[in-house]
Image 1: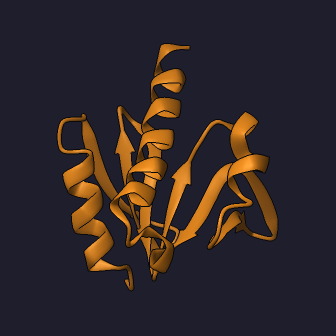
Image 2 (image 1 turned 90 degrees about the vertical axis):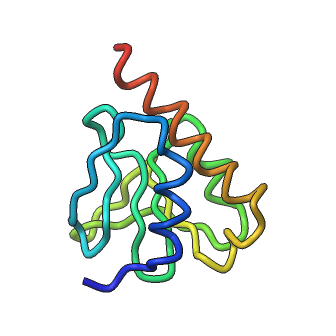
Image 3 (image 1 turned 60 degrees about the horizontal axis):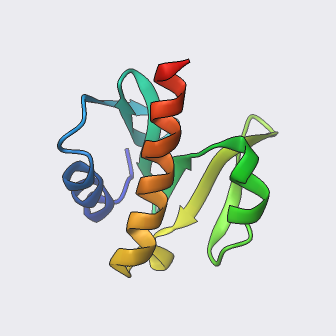
Length: 108
């Protein structure tokens, strides 16, 4: 399975204080926080599960695209190219969006 080891390390560190399960899926290493897909480390990209209401504004950021699985666009799932995550501020932006939405999922 080809996923970015550097992204895996960064995501592990970012979610180390959460209840996390790692699972290989979709050609990536998924990080399930509180039993819900939150982030994935893929080949040269990270996927973030965010609030679908924020999707249209966030997908416009550099290096971003809507996740497509089996020919279907998934609103609320955004791929971010690894080159656009080099800055710690940018990386944290995406991780925080995913963690905030994860809390909404488990509270409903």
